[in-house]
Amino acid sequence: MSLLDVTKARASFYAFLNVHFIELPDETFTGILRSEEFLRVLRHLKRSREVHPEIAQGASLMRAYLSSTRALDDREIANRLGVDRTRLYRGVPAPHGPAPPYEALWIGAGEESRVLQEMARIYAQSGFALNAGFRERLDYIGIELHYLERLVVNEISAREAQDEKLVQEAVDHERNFLRNHLGKWVPSFVSSALGHAQTDFYKGHLQMLEGFVEQEKEL
Image (cartoon, rainbow, N blue to C red; front, top):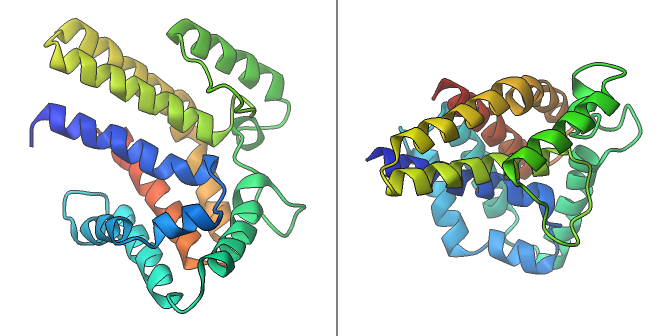
């Protein structure tokens, strides 16, 4: 696999992970999760030797959950996943769930103002803008994952143009953001959230997230 192919796969996986942070698991979304196409992706990740072991294990858990609930209709699955997603990713009173996935809540008390100002500066300098109508804190995990996805997309464009300077700039931006932000706090969040997850689907999603962040840091 060429470096360009690897980079395209990385961008796709950022989007694959992030959809669960930005989309509600309604009946339509649940239908997609139960489709043969989605199950095929999970099966490939489960068997792949090219991905981090946590990604493979997470895919196995997600697929097992979808297989074990085949007798339930989309509405019931959506309700069950919605409850677990709210507990894990939207914040419920302690001790019923982890602190929600906002960077400032995971790196130390009193950091909220500084982190939000820094996120605003980083996004503005990169020309990164949120989709219209999407209202969320700038340090929310879904926004940070989307930002990294856009950086990887920039790397793809630079590789396709065979512009080594732009490739290096893109890689440097990715590395710095992982080191100073997403990679700095997500492992702690995952460790806490796994103890609260009630479905193997979201246990699997959390494991995939942890594995992918570690894999990205290694790259």
